Length: 94
Image (cartoon, rainbow, N blue to C red; front, side):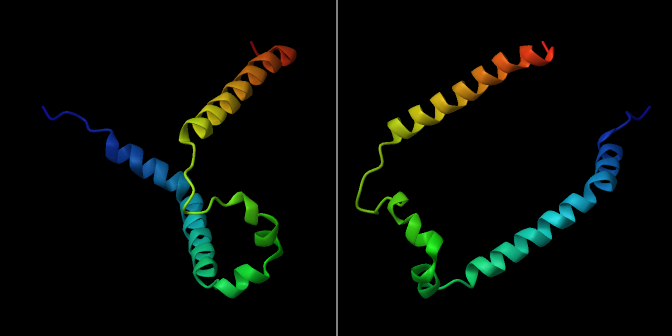
């Protein structure tokens, strides 16, 4: 007797439920890519946003302290988890 394979049924059902999201994601990605590739160096120089955040970019000749960046990222995530756990008790979700 042949064994039942659930994967084709699963993929068909999930595609029928998620195709609007997939199409929207593809269209949005295409639009963002098209506009991003159309930007020039002159646009960057004239951008108020880029000028305001110019200091945030690390020059290519400077070394990035990966250990510090990772430590800060982990500390941030742990704080988020801690506060999430602490606040869940207020809503009776524990």
